[in-house]
Image (cartoon, rainbow, N blue to C red; front, side, top):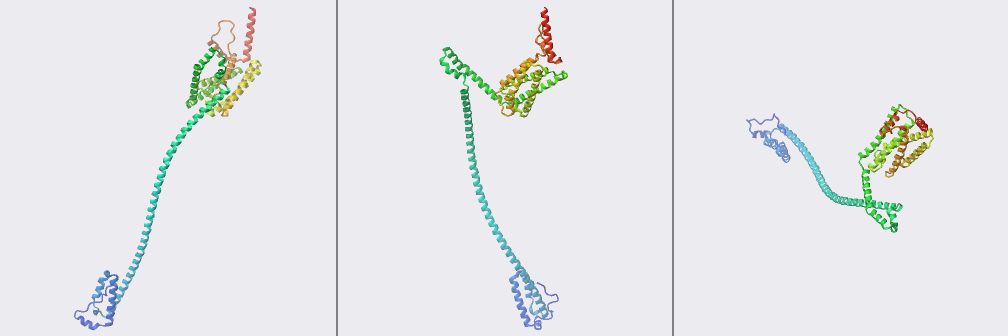
Length: 446
């Protein structure tokens, strides 16, 4: 509320209030002021009694009779202005109150929605906890079932292994029965005719069946067990056998190169054939020794240990055999004798046999490690015979007089003739024939 004008002042002290009332009294204006003041007091008291109480009381404390007409109009103007301000404030307060009511309603609605969401979330969390409990129970049930299944699987594996062993034994028995039916043992054959024998023969047979045959069978079982153990040998043993064979081949190639350098490139046909026979004899001898030590085919070990190296080795072996056979053909063409013809035919037969029984199965992954020891023994024996026949070309000449040479001296002369003799095999044979004729003439003259 606006204060009163500054130019308004109280009546002078020399005049009394009653004289002032007498001079300025105007009933219509006073009545209007009283009505307006009373209405203003009512409105202000109902809307904002505490805020405007002092102002209203100050206005009411001012006597209406003390105001003149101008002051009354100014007062009324100020009062209207104050009333307008208060009305605006009341409108503002009402609008604020309405806004607060609206916000209160919105907040209450939001609170209600949040309460509903909380209820829904609590319900969902409760349902999720129930589902989690169910899932945990299902997991526990599945674990129990899996434990039972694992136990049953283990039992089935044990039963399957037992059944597999039984099947293996049955297959072995069937194989034995088939073998005995196709190739009956000596005992089975003798049992049919033992009734016609005498007492001594039957006693010897019973002794053999009782003592000798079980010992032989035990020895065979021991050998087969050792054979299985060596078949499953470690990689180190397999690697050692393979490296030994390949190293022997490489060292022999270096030995041939050394011979070539020492003889200054004069590689006669006899030297080349002797070196070929020597290599084949030593190679198959090593194969047989390893076969006895390992009780399995060393060629099979080489194939399983390093297939690529074995493949290259077999290709090199085939190429070497072609060159060796070609040298045999040249030797036969140079001297068409029965000895050279027999050696050539033997080399062709051995090569064909090795190709069909060893080389081709090993190169086509159908290699059988239990079938070739007898072949290897025959190869070694035949190439040994070739080497012995070929070494006669370098052996010392036949001694006619004097003390016979000892073995060491004989080998020394053989070595010297091998390294230093530059004549061909035909020259050696011609010289030997000439010496034989001289010896015959000398004996006839005596």
